[in-house]
Length: 451
Ligand code: NAD
Image (cartoon, rainbow, N blue to C red):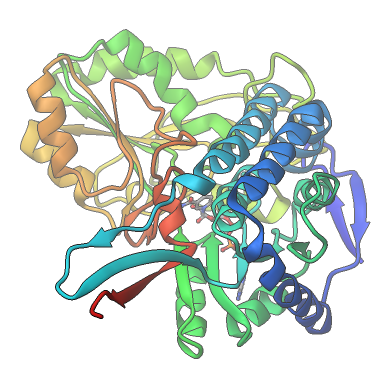
């Protein structure tokens, strides 16, 4: 049995029997058997089933939010927002089923047309930081395209995905189409990657495991999409609304206790505004309410595990220049405070993903240096630009090598817009109509019209 904990209290929430290779193979076989009938469901009926699932998520909104809050240690207000997004994602893909068109292409001697065919059985492997959200980002487009699913949630946080699997059945999605298999990455995950009947792996997690997914998938030429780590830059020019940028910056790093692949954990500030901005940022960070996730006023909960807390703490070596260290509850739970550090672009803290509530403040001289520092990273997932100069905002947005950016805002994840990384943050896109490309193959058919 695997004990699933509440990271805020260290209490056991459930004991889950971890699946092995045999259970994984059985789930793949169920998904394979369900595929022919599922792909043949008329698009409007498939859309109706996805819409019913979205509605069930809405009806179970509070229950799912509590599960997620307790299992991940998320403040309940944030968990509610995330579950709200899960419903929106299923609504979006319900609407997308019959809008993912093929083409007709002008050719001589007949008609050439393309179809979007489902891949078959897809294996979905998800992380512990946004368990239900990330599951929905993959399930929505995969189901909309007519694939069947084996989903392996993270060992630490399987509960919300398991409940979603039950709701999928309740929605009328046929048995075998959605299979949730909790278990270890090295067992269930690895088996999905190698299984000859799995056509694709949709993976979100660390860059290190992403490399293993790619290597493992080579054996069967599986399709792979990878959503991996990040070290995103929040670039603040001196002409920005500094008050607004500073008020928003803590949420962009400390939300989900910094365990967010999109965390803008490098805060780049134009030197002439650096002192003023740092002062405002320390004040805003001091106001972040760290405490019991079930308290409606809490803004930040604990880290996911004792082991992860050790990893986060290991970044704050004695040579790191700490500008501010907040408060966190003592006693039970894997608590860690918000920390702001002053850094240079070459420091470890400015280069590696901490995946905790630690932000590095880095000064820059001018626009060219801001772009150079922002791009001086193996990652390229997300980022923000704050300036009142519209031309510069667009110039810098085009120059920064990341998949997702926001200008005068830190919000860049929406059901209808593409999400994914450049460089070692991965490839393939989730959300929006773009995600459908990753869960279908283009088939080209020529039909002769010659007599
Ligand atoms: P992880 O890579 O350790 O685990 C992710 C998933 O992979 C889990 O389900 C795990 O069980 C599974 N896994 C582990 N080893 C495996 C193996 N050998 N074969 C197959 N599956 C295996 O990542 P994590 O610690 O759960 O999550 C944190 C990481 O995820 C961070 O690096 C973060 O940036 C990244 N992340 C990225 C995004 C994104 O969209 N880009 C979103 C959330 C998290």
